Structures are given as C-alpha cells and as structure tokens.
Image (cartoon, rainbow, N blue to C red; front, side, top):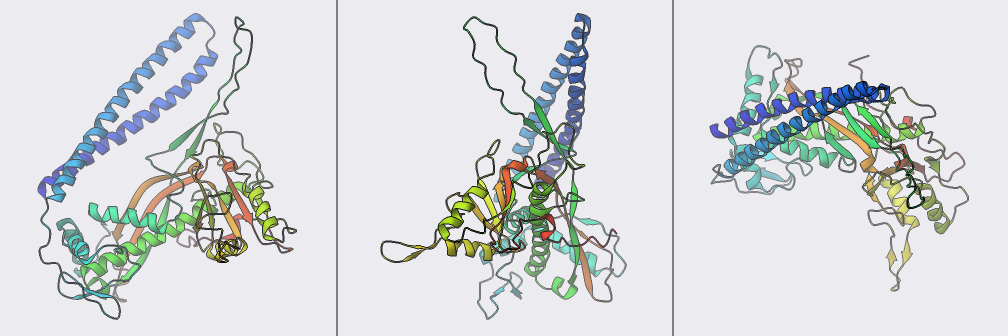
Amino acid sequence: MLKILMLRKKIDQRKEALAALAEEEKKLQERSQALEGSIDEAKTDEELSVVEEEVEKVAAEKAELAEKKSKLEGEIAALEGEIKQLAEKEPKPTDPAPETKGDEGREKSSQGGEARMRTNSVFRGMDIQKRSALVAREDVREFLTRVRGLIGEKRAVTGADLTIPDVLLGLLRDNLHRYSKLISKVNLRPVGGVARQNIVGAIPEGIWTEMVATLNEATLVFNQLQVDGYKVGSYFPIPNSTIEDSDLNLADEVLTAIAQGIGLALDKAILYGTGVKMPVGIVTRLAEIAQPAYWGNREPAWTDLHDTHLVAIDKTATTPNAFFADLILKLGVVRANYSDGRLFWAMNTQTYRTLQSKAINFNAAGMVVAGVQNTVPVIGGEAVLLDFIPNNHIIGGYGSLYLLAERKGIQLAQSEHAQFVQDNTLFKGTARYDGRPVFGEAFVGLTIDQGLAAAPPAPNDVVFAPDVANP
C-alpha cells in the first residue's frame, strides 16, 4: 500500500509539471498569434529577417515543449502501470459474505449485517464478491472511516474536502456515462484552463491551367473556438442512520446521488443550455437570430439557422409514407463536414413509440415488424431516450461536432453540521464543464406534431433547476 501511495505522489508531481507546461504552451500560442500580425506588417528584408528569426525560435521552443510533455506523459503511463500491477497483487478477501435473497433483494454484507441494495444502484452488474472486495480495499475503507469520523465528532467540522480513493473515482466516471446518455455521443475533451478548438476553413479548390503556366494562389483560413468552464452540482442531506449502516449503503447513497444529478444537468445543457453560467445547447444555437456575444473574433462566420434547422413536419403528410418522406428531408439538412459520421437523435420515450407506430409493417409471414430498432428509420442514427424532452420533439445530428470541455472531475466534500438537529449530514458534489456546437449546421431540431399549433423546438422548452443560492 505504501508503495502505491508513493507512486501516486510521483504521478501527482508529474501532472503538476504537465499543468505548468500547458501554461507555457498557452504563452507560446499567444506569441504565435502575435507573429501572424508581424508577418503581415513586415515590409523590408530586414524586418522579415527579424520575424523569421523569432518564428524559428518559437518553433524550437514548441518542439522542446512537446518533447517534455511526451516524456512526462510516458512516465505517468509507466507509473500507472506499476500501480495496476501492485493493485492486482493486493490480497483479496478470503471469506466473502454469501448472497441471500429476500423480499427487498437484500444481501449479506462482509460485516455480517444486512445491506439493502437497490436494483438501480451504482453497484449494479457487480456480484457480491466484487462488491465485498471493493469496500474491503484499504483506501476505500479509509475513505469511509474518515467520513464517519467527521460525522462522529461533537464539534463542527470546517468542511475539509474528502479525498475519494482512486477506485471510487473510476466508479463515479462510469456512472456519469451511464446516467448522462449524451456524454458518449459528443466530443468530450478533458482540458485545463481556457481551451481552444482549431478549425480548418473550407478547402480551396485546385485551379486547372497549362502544364508550364504559373500556379494560382489559394487561401486556406484557420479558425478557432474558445470554451471556458462552469460548475454543476448541488448539496444534499443524508440521514445519519443511513451513514451508520453498512459500508455498501453509504457508498451507494453518495455515489448514486452525485452521478444522477450531474448527469441529468449535463444532458439538459447539451441540448438546451443557455450559455449563461452553463454550456450553450444545440437548440439554443439553432434558435439564434443574431450573432451572440460569446462568438469569438477568430471563429467561422456566424450563420442564421433558425428557419432551416428548427422545423416541423408538414401538416399535409398524413400517411406513414408521406410522414417519413418529410422526416427524411427535414432531418437531412444536417451537414457531416468535419464530423466522424455518427448520428444521434434525442427524444422522449413517447416520441420514440410514435415513430415506431408509424413504421410498423408486416413481413411475409404476416407478423408485425417495427421499422425502428433503436434508430431513426432510413436516415439512421442512434435514438437516445431522454424523458425531459417535450413530446414530439427530436433533437440531434453529428455529435462529434459538439465540443464538451471537462475542466474538473467530480469532487465530494462534507459540510459543517448545518442540519445537526435534523440528524443529517450534508454532502456536496461538483463538476466543471463548458461546451457548445462547433458548427450549428451539423444539428437540427424537429417537431413531428402535425397539429395546427405545432411549433419547432425552442430553448425555453425545458426549465433548468433555479440557482436560488446566487440570485
């Protein structure tokens, strides 16, 4: 165990060094941008020589920086490999508690008491031996003991952050992907500081000419999108009676609440985020009728998409064939430029069933066949079911062109005894993200309701939990 702690300390040191290199890289990028202007302004050979010397200097520094980053990343990978090998050699519990079934799906814990385990818990998919082994680990046991120790003190505890063991950090991330259904569909990038997404402009067409003629000059433009970071999370009370129960109950309550809350808020933000203290959502970008304040000077030209990419099914498309023909045309406005080619379509369960009902036909044996098998018919793409989306709304496109920047992983902290009399302990969960569509043309919002009042999706269709703590 001491060896693992030492290796983790070395990893932390190298990660700090990587963070410092990231700052140096940022400064080099700023110098490069300044040099772009100097190149345009240089008139004489002497001025060009000075600029050229500076360009070579910056290039050399970039190469040296890249070498240092590569070396540190290699060392981190090697240290993590050592930790993995040592962890595999850790002694496993020899007498795991036998699994017993009851009316509530109860299981015997490794301490001999009964531990209620909900079917939707974060431990779903683990057998009793693996769960017992998880809570028997020294680092996990130390974490849980620390939580109980803080709660058991008679004086107020001044909110020191609790360090979650690495094994639980991995479990949190897995559950974030399970509860956030869209995080695996978009372009997720863990970053530090202000992040920039470089974009190559439209490819200039080559120009035909005589074999011995002079070539024509072409223009290739580079653009850049910038994202920042915002905090998502909440605090919640846990009854001390729950905490005093088995280790499995404590971990289940804490981890499930954090993962579900952050995952729900993240999915809402990817689709409907306002851009104010949260990411810009797909529908919000498509609904813009003027260039927004967040649009940077180095980004591609802003385009008005509210008429072409927020649409409704034609009211005259009453037959299934006419309906799907119009659906294909309306969803087909999304552009695949720059994407990885994978489509997703987010909708609620009722909308998904509506599509299934319209796609029903009969096979040669007279059996009913639904034309939707987790995909939108004909046009393709995975159907992602999110029940906070209004009925008859479909939102989606090429998810790789939504940039989701992850600033900070999930953190858990224990508060002062704000609910001491209620016999509760308060925990908080936080994470930091920012994001927005790189190209709005890659997405579309569609209403399949054919009523007279049918309207395309709008940003205010979904309400976010109010930030009452910061009026």
